[in-house]
Amino acid sequence: MSVQFTILGSGSSGNCAYVETAEARILVDAGFSPLQIRKRLATIGRTPENLSGILITHEHSDHIAGLLGLADKFQIPVFCNRDTQEATVWALKTKWLSKKSSPPEGSDSTEHLKAKINWQLFTTGAGFEIGDVSIETFSIPHDAQDPVGFLLRTARGNIGFATDLGYTTKLVLDRIRAANVLVLESNHDVKMLQDCPRRAWSLKQRILGRHGHLSNVAAAETAAQIMSAGLRHLYLAHLSRECNKPELAQHIMAEQLHHIGATHVRLQLAAQDVPCETLEL
Ligand SMILES: [Zn+2]
Ligand SMILES: [Zn+2]
Image (cartoon, rainbow, N blue to C red):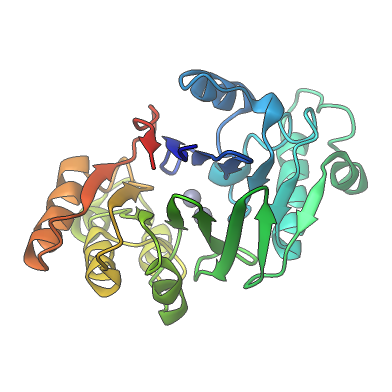
């Protein structure tokens, strides 16, 4: 059976991707509302009910916004490390406390929130399996408690995820080098970010910092460092709406691929509002 891969959406307003193999149906991050995730899964004829697991990279809302209402309702196992679990529970609780509307039952208490979800905790750096998929985890530099990237090893190829990182460490490069399909952050154009009038200086510093986000140029440099004959599909992801342009991100990476002779790589952009076309491996 083929392996199917669909980025349901990516950007600072939400991130979620879907991987399906013979024995597993996995979401990587759940950064849209439960309804929105349901709608986007429906575009590929899938529903959240029979997911085998949700992998969480880190606790920022654009990666966990739909966790409550999805994972608890259908008792879908949630895979993350302990610090991310703690921070996620805190973030979900704070979100409901800050709203005037009454929260779903139990979501106002840390212990209730912990008990509602079927957490499957891993140690960063350790691997685990969901059905026929082997998952490797690796630390990434980002301003969250213990953020990770993933490499999903399937019978038809390896799918790597490296978004939300200030720079690519040697460890990150080593891990994503094995990818046949790579989702790589290309967050901003440095000049557009520096010139952006709607962003405070402190926020710009955060994004540009070593625990922020990868720029278009940094993504292109990363591609050159990890290029292999095995990399077939490269998705640029987590593009900033205000401080990037899809055609600019595409152009910089396409130039790089041309420059290093990586003509075998199919380059695509992940969008915020619509799912990417499903990739069959
Ligand atoms: Zn993010
Ligand atoms: Zn983040």
